[in-house]
Length: 104
View (cartoon, rainbow, N blue to C red):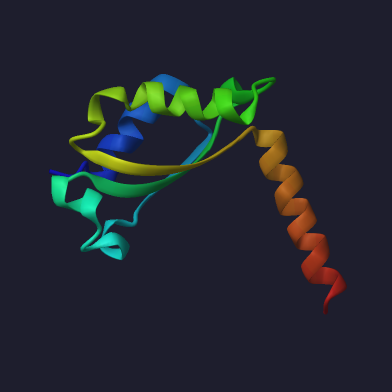
């Protein structure tokens, strides 16, 4: 049985105190995939947390996977992670805004 996005969000909130989090269930995009037969879902998490400061991308992903450890593999088959600090998110948004302003 696949995890509920709210369950994933709750576990990540408890472990990483994010300032922002989005959990997207992409399971429907993988219907018929061999891994989907086990019942585990496919998810994408975008999470912004001060706890990621000074950590490598791999370390950030480990933090997320550790927080969700009990859901693998029965409830989560695949997980894509975008893990940022507040400053990195702000920098991305500023870059995006300046790119769209220069194109208008």
